[in-house]
Length: 197
Image (cartoon, rainbow, N blue to C red; front, side, top):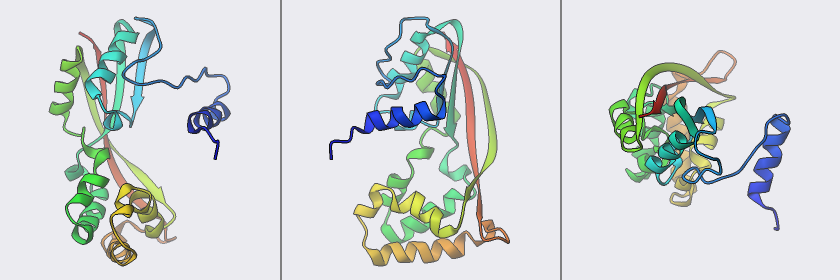
């Protein structure tokens, strides 16, 4: 189609904050000099990087000595009161592969494992704070569209399996549906601060 996805992302970002200089780069090879920033932040993305240690190492490299690296990750799947049941429903109908395909968000939720990654990257964890927020959706159907239909799992299941996932999700997640029909799903995350060791 001739559309460059990277250009599109930068265009959207610039609309959000025109006063910020936006750069698109590989997280494992940041285009900044050593010690460029007092604070480096990575929000809900580290779990998707192919080389997490390299990305953390780069965050430490571009931070000033004694600087702060802030990383937000989601807690493990077993700590997710709302998302855990949704993924269990998908796995019940689509097989264990569904847990892997839908579980990317939760793979860094073990704080001990995160500390090991940080240590391998030359970082020292200073603080770790856990909190629970709320993910809101107009309906259970919209939640399932967002969390199931828009993932690679849809390439591996047929319409009948998707419908069974949707039907069971409506029943399983009913307790999170408000009087207005919206879904308020608890989501637990960690905010970790580290410094170059």
